[in-house]
Image (cartoon, rainbow, N blue to C red):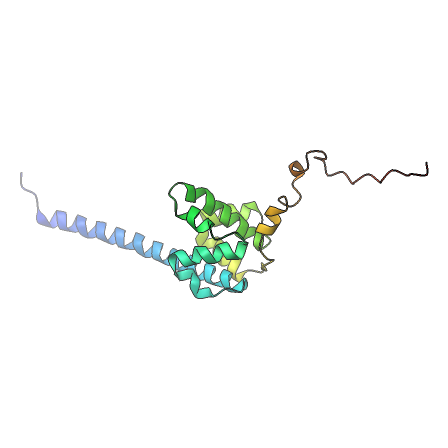
Length: 160
């Protein structure tokens, strides 16, 4: 059996074209996400150029959400970093007044949600880690004696 070299070279050319297109699309989506992250940093009063420096951008995010810098170590440990990056994204979205649904968007579709955060109407409200340290806002499970957020009862009347 004889194989034609034209057939194998055209298949290789088609495969190279497909790989090139995939690479260009991924590059474009990455650039869009970086531009959104740049604007998000600028809204928080941090330098926008920090978005393009690999580990420094994580350090800036840690500063924006108000967590200690030891978090950088946790974000560099394999397997542990998945949990901490999702937590960091959640605190980042809360720092801009967004909810957990926006965090899911940042994790799964960052090239869409970082520009929404950077160019949208969301304003930087301050570090959300302070809210987390104060009991995660209005979490009813944070008050075991009052899980239904009942108003406090009035103090007893000493004259009665």
